[in-house]
Image (cartoon, rainbow, N blue to C red):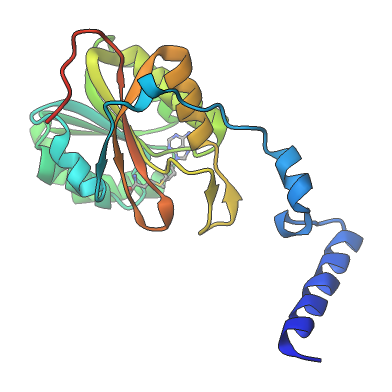
Length: 229
Ligand SMILES: C[S@@+](CC[C@H](N)C(=O)[O-])C[C@H]1O[C@@H](n2cnc3c(N)ncnc32)[C@H](O)[C@@H]1O
């Protein structure tokens, strides 16, 4: 038996075992079955992308975000990107939000001085609920990178929109259909497209990331707003 045949036999046997013990996984479905599980993506139109610029990565994207702004990062994990937001955009106020106490403790330790000066505020809790407790017309921009399910991303986008200034920006990480690292379906791409379609937002930037975990920046479509340069 050559190695190709052996690999197929092993895969098939594993599939049978998983089925027998009732724990089938994504690999066990056929292409046709997977297409049925995952509904179609609503496509964007020209008006949603015609001002969109491509950027090499999300650090470059930060250079286009407003300086001295009021902003938030939803989902901070180890606070590595929070540090980049602080260094590159020098916000007047940065809200760091995470549901995981470990992430929040990292932020409290890492940004002790910024918290003392009032530049950084750290929040432990659900992101959409935390954002909804803020004043209206508050954020210049926000970075959405919390719950990557369709409903999670949708909630964060909707909450952010309600607290955003008229010409505010929403940056969203992981604009991707499927996560190759954790072999899991993400819903961010569909949530972003539906958000743009339903709320009349356009993409201003698409910033590439390794393995296609791309970022996008969204802004409400208005007649008078100039493109960002
Ligand atoms: C991908 S990580 C964020 C990475 C970080 N933005 C970066 O670029 O380095 C996602 C984070 O979102 C947090 N999270 C997930 N669901 C959340 C929710 N409903 N509310 C707040 N945070 C959430 C997780 O605890 C995790 O720390």
